[in-house]
Image (cartoon, rainbow, N blue to C red; front, side, top):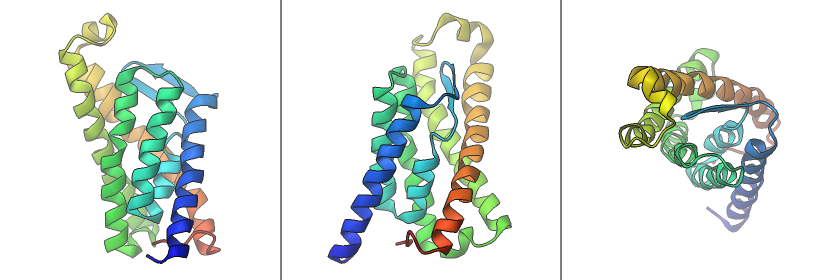
Length: 184
């Protein structure tokens, strides 16, 4: 990476971090059903960073985690945000090795679904210790592990991830086509 590319990556990471921090703080569309939370577009900056490079995706994952922390979300949700590093790096590395993975609608949908599953598995892994450590509100124990962890967190994350992924694609395609942001 040359100096100019390095600087461009740092600026893009900073801008996407700022977006990722602001969205959970100001979003009017936020539903919290601990341990599940749904903040519309909260993953958009992260997905766009994933399309750029692994470095940018790691930086933005850390920045968006800070955003959830600053927004006052419960620690289990903040740690779920931190787990985004995993799917973001995996996705970014896949894009780097297979650049045409986003080139067709079919490939893009498959890629988004695979990333959503990785995303959900990571978040479920984060929530399991909280569930078995009796760290969640008592109402969630009455509904059971399958409802709370598998359905709310697992399936809910897949749905949330896919919605935000498609918002990201809608934003990314014209930016990439206009060469506003170059994939590294």
